[in-house]
Length: 165
Image (cartoon, rainbow, N blue to C red):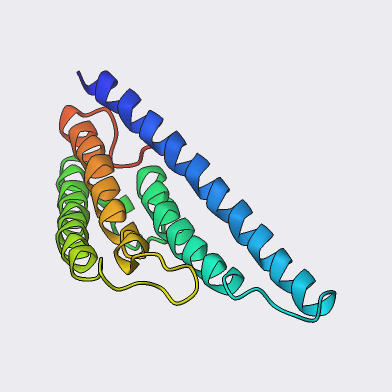
């Protein structure tokens, strides 16, 4: 069962990376179009700056979710490598449960923020701001998904909280 869940997490991870790539490309095209219109056409499009900004927000928060899976975030590891294995397992469980709790907070309050701002629209694109803020609960849910995998792996003894995708 753990292998099936890990495969599902890998599929979700790959989809998130692909979506991140799409957002980066859209951000680059939008920014390039902005530069072209400003210097060649002597007139700017009103929507390109906003589009780039929102793509940047989504790219960063989805990318942060991907880094949770690969354990790519910055870590201060002063003493955990020196701990005995049984204490290190407990230490890693505590850390992973704290990250899981952070995912709950992001998902819950991010969802509340999305609902509160769905009627507010962005200036140029006229998008509901709840869609822009939707990256926050998506990050929270991805943290929950990947932390279940990490905690399961620690409890099952398959790894010490470091998972490579």
